[in-house]
Length: 112
Image 1 (tube, rainbow, N blue to C red):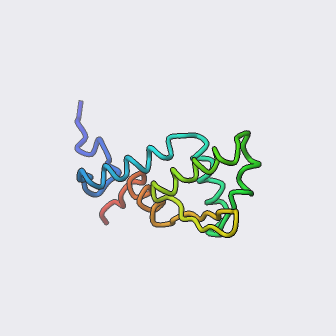
Image 2: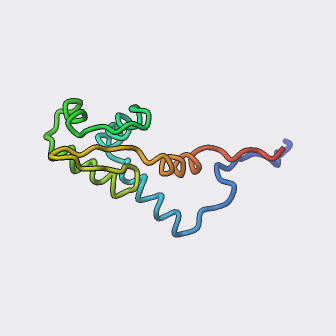
Image 3: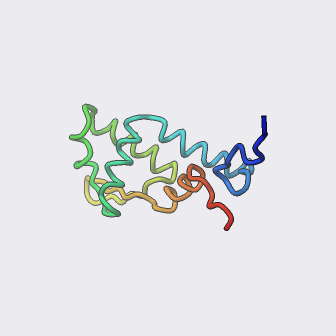
């Protein structure tokens, strides 16, 4: 049997150091809840536009305070920004945060 020298591929160009790994783990932990993952997906689907919490709440069988809690977790993880206008809060995805997650999940480009 002939052994292949290229049996495995890596998704990173270099291994993660402890600090970036901890930061990424916290971000992935925030996404570990199906409601938060759906919320992020709904906001990301707005194509960079802001989304009011009042637009998100009807998509779930949860109270507005529960939705707001999940949005707070996503904001604290650095995935969303928010701006209060009167009684409503508007959310927007942080593209750089999604890019950091993508950089870890997508294979590094193969050398030419």
